[in-house]
Image (tube, rainbow, N blue to C red; front, side, top):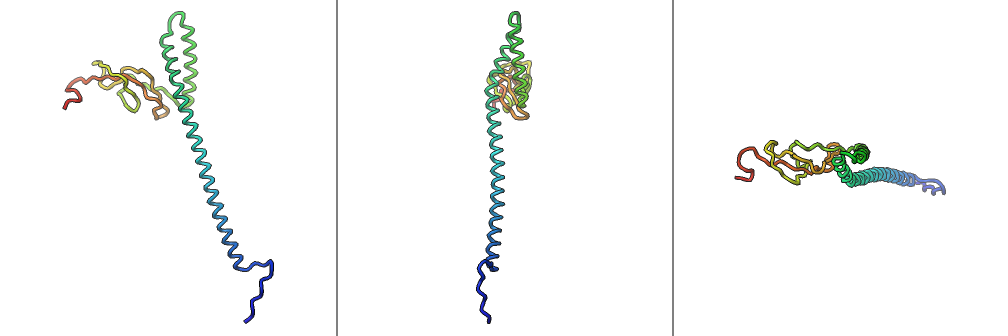
Length: 172
C-alpha cells in the first residue's frame, strides 16, 4: 500500500469541495428565503399604508359631511329677497364640496319613498300615513351616503308605521 500523499498547502480536497458546495447551497436557500420575506414585508407595508390612508380619508369625509348637511339646510331657507346672494354663495360652495366628495366616490342615497332597509337607514322616528305603504321612508332627516356599494353613512329617516289591515304585528 502506498501511503497517502500529504495535502499540499493551497489545494482543496474533495471533502473541502463538498463542504463548500453545501455551504453555498445553504447560503443560496437563505438568500431566497430572505428575498421572499423582504417582498412579503414590502407588500404588507404598502397594504397597511393604503389601509391607513383610506381610513384617514374616510374619517375626514365623515367629519366633512355635517358641514355639507348644514350648507344644504342653509340653501333650503335662503331662497327669497335679500338672501338671494347668500343662496347663490352657499349653492356654489356646496357644488365645490360635491365635486370633492364625488372625486372620492361618495354619492348621496335617495331614500324617500323607498322601503326601510336597516343596512342603509337609521330609523329615528315613526309616523302614520295611511296614504303610504307600511315601512316606507317618509322623510329624511339626515342624508345617507354610499361609496360604491358600501354604505358610507346611513340616512337618518322617519319611517311609516302603518299596517293596512290585520292585527298588530306583536299580536299572537
